[in-house]
Image 1 (spheres, rainbow, N blue to C red):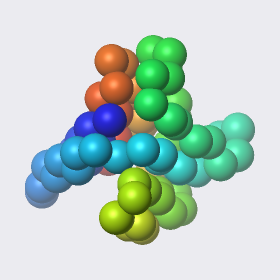
Image 2: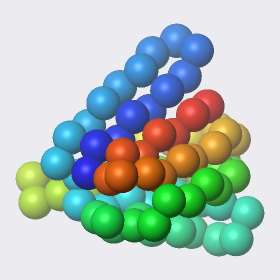
Image 3: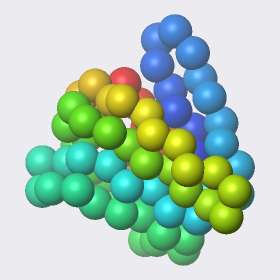
Image 4: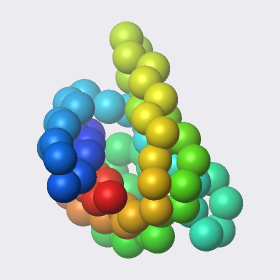
Length: 76
């Protein structure tokens, strides 16, 4: 999967991500490869990106998460 983190200051792209976890209004959610098209409201907290090599934590403000065709867009 690709993860695009979009903010007014910077856009970052992470490729070959296997799992994304993030805080939402429903609790901590996780997206894996081939997830259905979805939209979530992002709450403040930690976003975790993981694959076999990378384990990255990103501190998040409120925003939104949109998942479609193995591309996840996290917008602050």
